[in-house]
Length: 194
Image 1: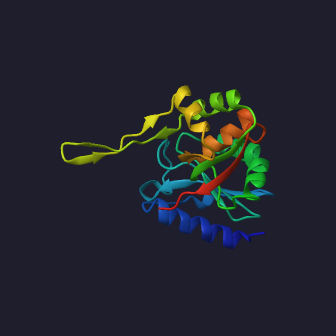
Image 2: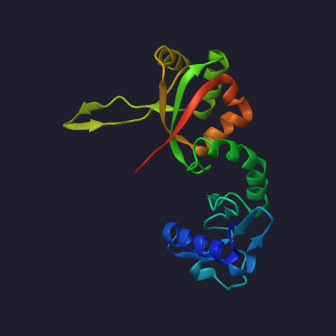
């Protein structure tokens, strides 16, 4: 378990790395049993009593793992907490095989065995995976992502493992929650490195 000081130091470093012009609003730190929630505010608005509706969304730091989950500016504290609490058990399961995974990850989804091809196809079409076929034109190579169609997905399933690149952590969570991904296929998640 992280101490309050360790959590705040980790959150400050994260905010500095990700949002150089913003800081943690020390007046709005939530210290709950399983997590810390930090509100982030642009430095120019710190300490001012104004209605502020922009900037980064909240970040939540898990006390057990130290993982940071950030939410976009469209998420308020309440909505971020609802989402975090609802997905925390699932994140725990995913961490057993992919300890680096967060809702903000970008990863490869590797499907090694399909249990229900039709339902898996419907589920994948919802998250809109893409593929790239490099094309040369005007002396340059163009890599424009193309969305998978049902026919293209079925064709990809003919040769397993089927690898889908650049899938967001949020999309993976959606596949588990809305479609019970583990019942549709055997999968592996691979961290995308820069």
